[in-house]
Amino acid sequence: MDLIDETRREQARYDRQARWYDVAVAPVEALVFLGLRRRLWSAIDGTRRVLEIGVGTGRNLAHYPKTSRSVALDLSPEMLKRAARKATRDGRRVDFLLADTQHLPFKDGVFDIVMATLVFCSVPDPVRGLAEAGRAVRPQGQVVLLEHVRAENGVLGKAMDALNRLTARSGEYVNRDTAANVRKAGLEVTHEEKHRMGIVKLLRARPRVEAAAKGEDNVVAS
Image (cartoon, rainbow, N blue to C red; front, side, top):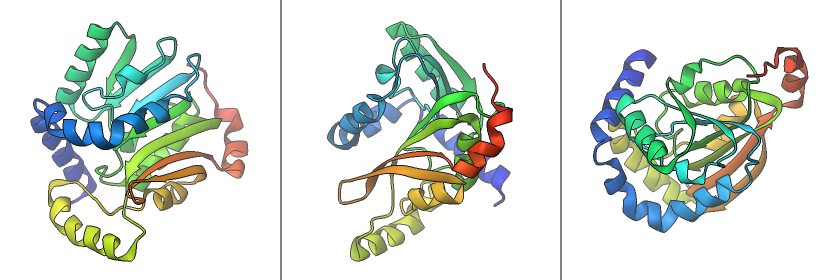
C-alpha cells in the first residue's frame, strides 16, 4: 500500500470511529493521559501562535490558553466536526482546518509552538509528518509531543513488537521510537520525560541550530 492509499485509509478509519471515540478512550484517558495533557499544555504562553496537529475530537481544547491564537487541524472531517462543536460550546476561538500532517498547508516558521498528542503512532510516514511540524515552527520555536512509544525494556519491547503485527493492520503502530523519528526529521530533542515504564513519553524539540540559521529569512508572520 502506498502512502496516499494508507493516508486515505487512516482518514476513513477515524471518520468511522469519531462517533464513539471519546467513550472508547475514556478509561485510559482518565488513568494515563489526562494529567500528562495538563502538564504538556501548562507551559504554553497565551500570547503565542499555537498549532495543534491531529486535534481529533478536541480532547485538548480544554487546555488551550484562551488568549492564544490557535489553529487545530485533523485528517478526519468527522473528528473535526466534533472538535468544532466542543470549541463553540466552551466559547473558545479556534481556527479548524482539514489537512494532512504529512503536507501542512503553511509557510515556513508561522507558529511559535506546534503541539501533538498521540498522533504519530498512526501517521503513515511519521518522519515526514515531524519534519513538516519542524518546518511550520519558527527557528526559536518548539515542537511538543505526548506519545506512546516502544518500551525500552527488552521483554516488554519485544511483546510490543509482536502486538504491533496485529495493530498495524488497522493503522495503529504501538512500537514506534518517536524520539528517534524526531531526530530523523531534523529536530533536536531538548527535553524527554518517560512515564508508564517508558511506554509514554513527553518530548520537546526544536529546529537544529544549523537549520534554524538557514531558515531565518523564511519566517512569515501570520
